Every structure is written in C-alpha cells, then in structure tokens.
Length: 83
Image (cartoon, rainbow, N blue to C red; front, top):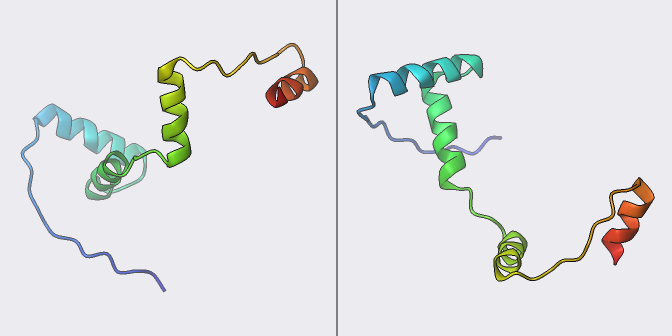
C-alpha cells in the first residue's frame, strides 16, 4: 500500500524560455511537466548531506590530510586505502 502524499495546487510565473526548456527536459525524461518540476524541486529542497558527509566536508575544508592513494595498480590502490 502506497502512502498518500497531500498536494496543493499552486501557480508560478516563469520566464517563457525557462518554461519551454523545462517542457523539453520533461519530455526527454518521459514525465509530465508537473512531475518533472516537482521532482527537480524535491531533489534540491531535500539534498541535505548526512552526518558522515558533513564531517568529511569539514575535514577537507580544514585542510586535514587524508593520505596518499596509490593508483599504480588495483592491489596497490586497495592497500593504500587501509593506510
């Protein structure tokens, strides 16, 4: 049984060229314009990274050095991940 999602009808004013582009993208994705726009907005609105990703972002921004990855071979690569 699927969950019922409450929806409310609304209207937006969009630039004509943007609307035409969205229609093209929706058709390309085999979706209705409404479904396409809703899915794009949902992706943007709920794109919050999880705690592990947030911690990795903070490490990268702080300049913490994670080590060197050896890409000379697959075995070397796997070994360098453990170091």
